[in-house]
Length: 174
Image 1 (cartoon, rainbow, N blue to C red):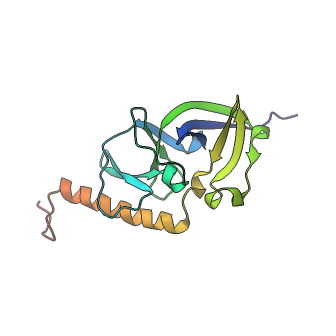
Image 2 (cartoon, rainbow, N blue to C red):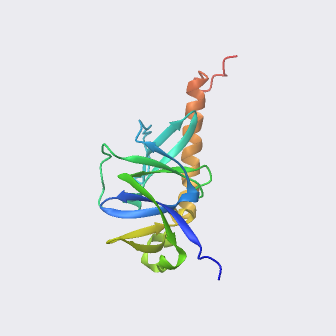
Image 3 (spheres, rainbow, N blue to C red):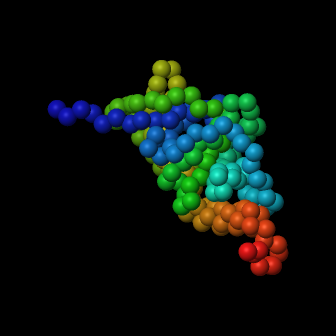
């Protein structure tokens, strides 16, 4: 009999709940950083992270999932996620707790009707806790991904203009 498939999960705390992302969708974990907060951002965006000249939108999963809103604290972390939006995103979490490997049989499917946009793909009981296994591709609606890409492009242009000294329609300096 072939060995049972295993899933590697990054487990994190979010507004008093435990959640996880597939480890293969985690690009990097970063400490909380200074974020740009241009006016007019939707409430699910905490701001934009300038990561070596690349703009990364930072999502507030607590607001998106209608959990109690948490203020970033001493142990708040940013998880750079692949597969949730075209240009990549980061999610703000209260803290990252562990990498966990669970067998396929331990994942309890969650019906699409029981979570926003079907973003909770499964739940897993570990020790005495329930961990909600999130699907990165389902965290945002298609329209939200499109709007996020537009905000990201504007923020990227602002960084480019700032770094290259572009002023209100004037040509770039050689």
